[in-house]
Image 1 (tube, helix red, strand yellow):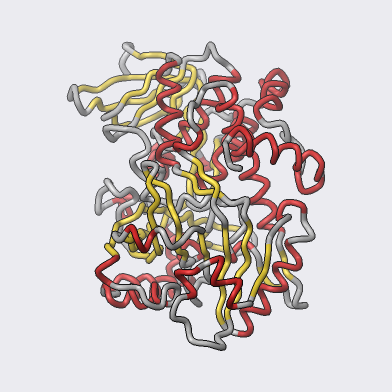
Image 2: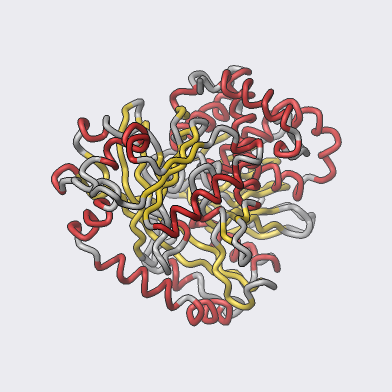
Length: 493
């Protein structure tokens, strides 16, 4: 590498919600560190973080049925739901800290209160939802969740969904009013603007071509300035790969052993977006249904009120699709380029195991608009095709790796951090609940990669996240207090 290296303490690759969150936390913990951001596109938060490329649910496990499961003895396992909710609580606390300290001005530009609901049809599903509700309300995290299978109550909750339904249908819902809609695109842009105003060097149209570790443990990064058509050489003690679907390729280029035997499987998504404001105004909730048999958890159908550019809109989906690209703006060669000698057996094993998923994706790809409308009509019986347009959502790359539980070539649904043993580099891979749990995940990165600083940083971390190191489910008084202060800071009441 050239001697003309520009030195930083930290290099963040990708200007999405993950890098923006990590950069903001590090700026609070170590204000003197030099942080540099590289983003391949022209602005921040344009891929998975963009408001139309994710569901904006603020995943708090209040409505997502795939976070709870029925055990063989008929009882309901809510461990995953508790875990996800605890992680979202961490995000709320951090965002409140940013608002209270004037690092973010108007919280309503990125977060709005919105009921979260689960909706099921059929006798067995109604029984499951009732049991799930009974189990969840015993936990302080889910206090205030209501259950109803009374058509009159449901008409009040979800008039658009209940209109023109046949009488006597087995249908039930749970509703909790502490849910939110989060515009992760707007939040990302706010955080990046804050970093820029605090001496963080944010470079757009900069593509990272290669990275290798130097003998002193630092990383040398070769970056292509696409505007200036020139190569730049940078180095840093710590590098974070937060490039969404682009992270796997960079992880492979780093050559760290922890990045071996990992593959990626891209899944694209489509939403139906309502173009009739009158229809959009009749619905006020995020309503999640049950995934079809064989569908991946990220394809749970949901009808969502969204606030985008401070305007109320309505989306239904997602419909899964397939594209070999790892990013919306990626290349059709991404999937093939990710196949390496060290991960080929892992990928082949996954291919054999996931025939059901492959078949499901092919079926989804073949759907016409009218067939997609038929799925929407399970939610809105009288939905008219003219009122809805198809929009392409974000590209997700599911992690494939060998696990003890699943064996060789197991498809992981979730967010994964892969870091080097020396803590000098970390990559974020995977998908949902992703953005919602960004603060928790980035604290995990900090714990793994900066263990020598944790003691000195602990007081500041606790100032930003009062529940740090504690389970809120086990500390109901603290939970009450935090809910009250975050509701006030984020103007959620």
